[in-house]
Amino acid sequence: MKKILLALMLSLAFILPGCGGNVSQNNCGFSGPANAIYLVIYPDGERLSGFTPVTGGLFLVPKRGYTCNQLSVRYGISLGFTLSASPSSVYLPSPPASVTMSGQSFDATYGMPRVDYFDSNGYLVGSVGATSVSNGGTSLQANMPNLSYVYSGTYQVKVTNKTYDGYYLNIVGQAPMTGWGRDRPDSDGDGWYDDEDCNPYDPYFTNNCNTETCGGYGTTPRYICDGMVY
Image 1 (cartoon, rainbow, N blue to C red):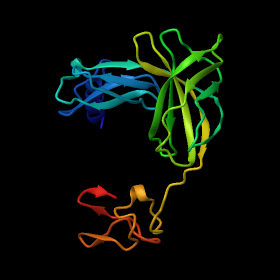
Image 2: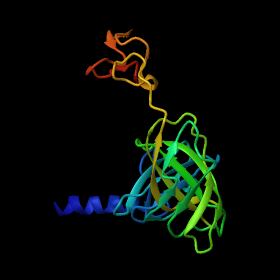
Image 3: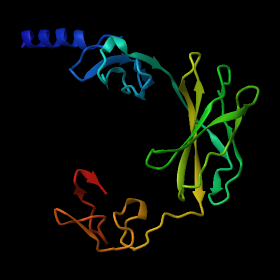
């Protein structure tokens, strides 16, 4: 058992370097601070972002054909402040021209903060730069992004400060916002919204891929067809 433990410790020593270890043929391993946002920059300019583990330590990123020492990694911080948005409720067919975010630690030292809008599933639906930040960093103003394709629901508005080297990595916090006046349509009434239904106008549509119903109806679930979930 001692020999096994020693072998495991030696292997970890090789895959946990701070600048990126050759973890596998396809992935590089980096060791970062706990629960921090990271940005991996590839030689071709491609970027990949995510969060380190909540306790810190190893995280993996794809090589994309490069060696690990060719990848550059930047780390940011997440302050986790609770912010407020005004207005906090938006009529989507005719939204206001701008929004005011209130809170703390808004910082325009290296450029205006970025304001991102995420839906309830965590998908980004809009992103704009702030137009002004108050003295003391307790409020900012930003134009409203294009919401013409956004449906009624609850959204999170997140503010991120720019770092000295030009990247948006320091997350200040977020505020809830409600959008209303544009409900997701379900034209055939089968329980699946038009944007997730293979045929939004036929509740009994079968797409003949393995005789499985696409989109479902009533309580019938969706099926995987040709490797895609509809």
